[in-house]
Image (cartoon, rainbow, N blue to C red; front, side, top):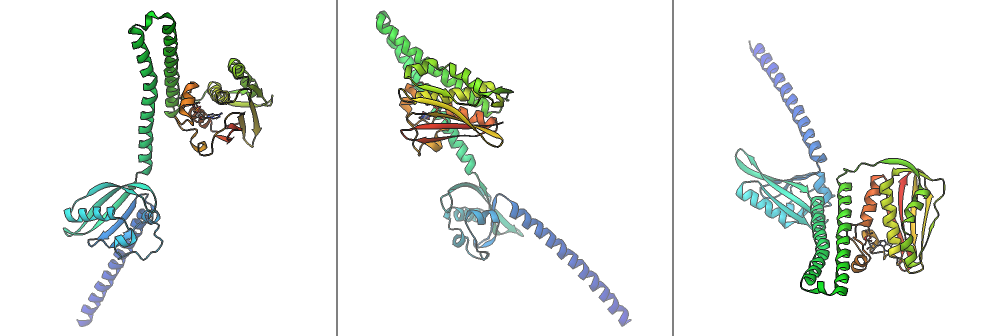
Length: 368
Ligand code: ADP
């Protein structure tokens, strides 16, 4: 009787141990899944106790705050991450027992913007800590700032010629119309401003169609030298006016597969600039280098050149080294950004080499 009872208890114990170890294995499995999720998350995750000591931190947070020591568990969050904004957010969430979200601009150790969410953690309806999830919104904010800048630039660029047109029309209506000589001069100014508005709107429409990826490429194979000769033909008057010599040193046998209309826009913009920003009696030369699977085309000029500080921004929309000079020459400040978009649509890249006072060499690559 005694042995039977003891055997039953032993069996029961063995069964319990088996169940327990199965549970532990299951928990371990669950834990490693959770750890893998936390480690692979792009968002930063921090768990703290209710006295704001660290329970865990995921690698995304370690990377942002440059935390290389692993002994942060149990330490005050502020010691490891010296950021009062995050601690304030946690304090409020713990006090109000509710989720709060706030944008925090980090200046140290990196300049970044985060949308930080603090969620209270409850254990048996009692608050035991707080979970912080940080979303990196730096890129979003950068794009928003760019969009705001763009809208401000466009409005300004449209407003300037419109104000002039309005002013001259009013002057004409107030009596200048009777003054034959001046009225012609005023009408010519109105025409110039209207042309500027037209150019600007055409450039903006081009840019927006490239950006919305609506414009597919109409690819065809053609001879680059012959094509460049056709484009150059249109610049005769401009070249003569400035006495600039233009040479087409492209080899006769280079064939490319590209969208002819768009490559015409690229060459037109680069050659127009090379003449516009050139000196009297200067030169422009077009030549190329053959690289593995692409051709690098150069448009070289003997113009004013570009300062090293301006070079990284030269392909940005509306970036002009000398705003007044660009406007005077009929520029919109969008030519180079259009060139960049078209070449990138073709899978190539653009750039410039320049020495101030000696000239510039704009280049683009195009797959063979
Ligand atoms: P735009 O010519 O209408 O002003 P772009 O986008 O074509 O606008 O060029 C932007 C700016 O880059 C110009 O305003 C000018 O300051 C500079 N730039 C472009 N091409 C040249 C060049 N060949 N030589 C010197 N500066 C240039």
